[in-house]
Image 1 (tube, rainbow, N blue to C red):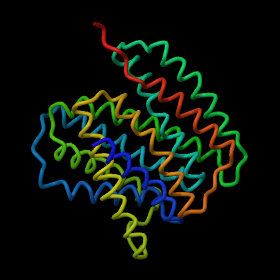
Image 2 (image 1 turned 90 degrees about the horizontal axis):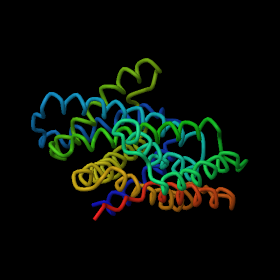
Image 3 (image 1 turned 30 degrees about the horizontal axis):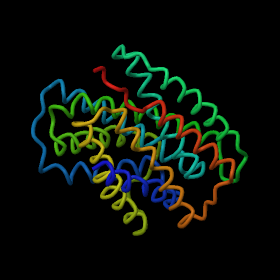
Image 4 (image 1 turned 30 degrees about the vertical axis):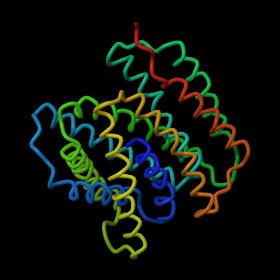
Length: 273
């Protein structure tokens, strides 16, 4: 399921990048709305506590999509996907603060590699890069990490159909007033845009995010978020083919170092014998 999910999310950045000129909040709103409706037949009423956590996770998912989609319109696919995939670093910090699980020496070594590499990536003056876009990608990664942590606490008790639908409905309910406030158009798009939104809903969301949420019932959040580190490679290849975004050698090297550091930081701990 993780393999299927990674393959599906690799297309997300390119699909959003191809919808140039469409407001990121509009894309996020329609993506979450479609998935919420598609999974609605499998919804079963969750407990009150789980419903509150699902609502919080939905709010984080909404903010994650809005910031990351905006990032993809300001910087390159490779830079954006590498920076948003720093989520496992944020996950480790959150587990330390909220659950009292002190990071291992390996985590600190990984962070010590990932953070300077991410800074090097941001300093690369390659065409198409943007510090604002890079910053939004970092924020999107933080929000995505919180979304995964909240989902892990719910998925042990709530089915994937219920969780997948309700978390997307919650996200859509957060994005709707946001769209009205920022003036994001909700209709009147050309048919290629509608096809792109449908592809986002069926691929990256239905197979990708729901695949990760399915895996959260059986695997720690750190392992699931580590699997997302394969996304930048697939996304970069697709961006090269379909968007003509050719990364510079410095961008590739910095991206590899950053992902290697994150993988080291998020590598699962050995259980005591």
